[in-house]
Length: 367
Image: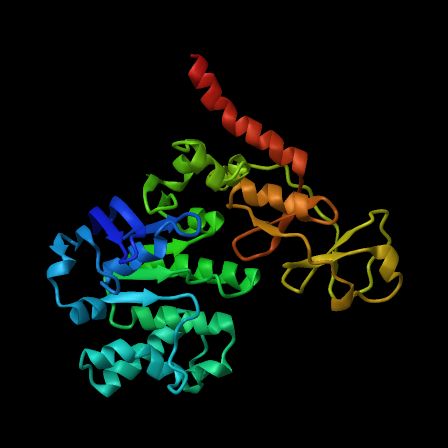
């Protein structure tokens, strides 16, 4: 557990970056600090490992005052992930991952074994271990940064905008991978982001800070969206917070329809529809195609329209609605856990499901 008790940070020029912050980050959970620029998110994070010293107040880890601990020992026991990974350019990937274990005096074999294991755990191929950071993509470098933070199995991890330096597709993949790892490892994590969608997706609880470093509200994501404490929080989480809240509502049984498909590489059959769904050999959707544009030839990768998203059958109402609204055919594609096509759904059918999901709560309130 990380606890801030009346913590204030005032810089020599008089600027107050964090003002009387009292906050608890529970053990084994992800707490996200979010807010506008200048609200003290990163300053708060860096005070935990004493890269910045608080002016007043105390920060404790599992009840132990960090101000009374040796700073170097404190930092070696905390995983730290930053925006651009911060890898050593002259060291290989495996050597980067093993940085903290080496500082802790682990022998070479144990360090290499753990580094190789973590490389695979974060979804990277073993052969990448011998490469240097400049030979990796931005997303791969960020995965190495997470692996390095996990190398000594620290109970606490600090993450400062860890996924903001990569493109949106890679960012979404990294977030999913991070949540998978956390479900296995159960670390106590304090994460900083400026992106409210990322905060809501990743956080077990979200702390919204105002400019000047004062805590505006801390709550579970669903409660934060439904019950913002004041106008500042409501404005920050967005006027579309009702749509965001749909991600916390599981998809009920939707009226899925059988969707005509064509196999990638085959000639589409005659169709009156303006759009035809393309699948691979395992019936996984790969995109949409306009039969009128393809004619009597086989469908190729170049013919595909990939704008629409795909929603899991056991996912959220937000994902199902987004799939329907983003699809060029306006038919949302729903898949099973293996990614195979289950069927399609229309936006108005998802909206009906939303109404029916809300109705029991309204009826209960009238009883």
